[in-house]
Amino acid sequence: MKFPQPVPVKDIAQRIGAKLIGNAALLATGINELHKVEPGDITFVDVKRYFKKSLQSAASIVIINEETECPEGKALLVCAQPFEAYDSLVRQYRPLRPLSSQVSESAFIHPSAVIEPNVTIGHHVVIGKNCYIQANTYIGDHTHIGDHVNIQAGCIIGTDAFYFQKTEKGFQKWHSGGRVVIENRVDIGAACTINRGVSGDTIIGEGSKLDCQVHVGHGAVIGKNCLIAGQVGIGGKAVLEDEVVLYGQVGVAQRIRIGKGAVVSAKSGISKNLEGGKAYFGIPAAEIRVRQRELAALRHLPVFFKEYYGE
Image (cartoon, rainbow, N blue to C red; front, side, top):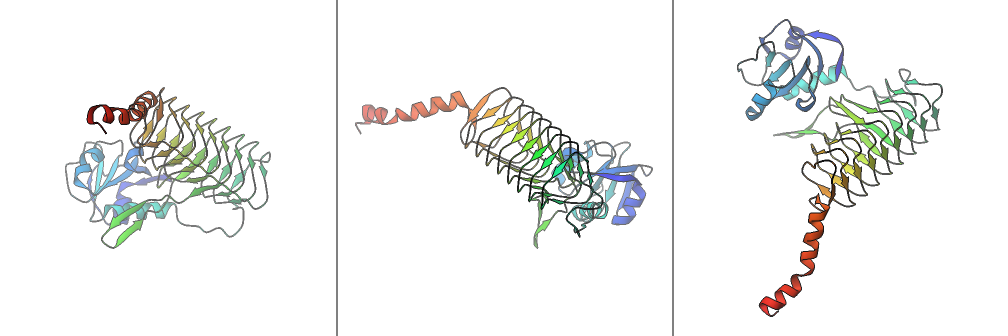
């Protein structure tokens, strides 16, 4: 998530009541989770085992709950509750704005786009040339849709991330300040649901095709020319590189990376990273040749037991 204009780190420290350590002249240009930070971004850490990873990340400013050595050129903002401080900044720059009309006055829709009845379009949405949005679709705030995109009926795009911080009082919801970005020539089937990121973007790459009832979790990145069949579920922050094919009812765990050109057969469960250019099957998913040998071996087990154990 990028700020409308750079914000002095001194102002950020004052707003969240933090002690500033390090480069006091920095300007914050955005705020993001650790896995998506860029130079100029603010991130946060409140677990000591992740301190090193956070401090060595691309983030220029780290909200942290313990004083420690600050890397050269960066700034630390030390406060008791980094998560709450981080969440408050996201809420400040992307506040909740309920819609009061079916199409927000701040949305931009290209004149060549076709919008059917009962489509709801949120604040600061952009819809490009020659798009076709079918009836009863919801497009949430800050969604960016490129050119020649087809979205079938009943899709829900740009809903809140399913992301909660576990606390002593229960689960505390993170405010969703990210976006959904749908690139050019994407087709999205009926009744798909696509969550926006917590502070980063959920991205559907150019030329990718989604069947009906696909769910894409917060901050997931789908590459170019991917093919995703019906009832696939993609967990938050997962990354599908270009030309990945997922057949029906495949489940992808959060933060998983699937390499370019990988093909995953129906009903498989992906719980770890997969290399590109290979075919996979099973729960957990493994190379299809390995799984086929395992299944063949299982079919021979009754003969094995009868021969060696007389049963």
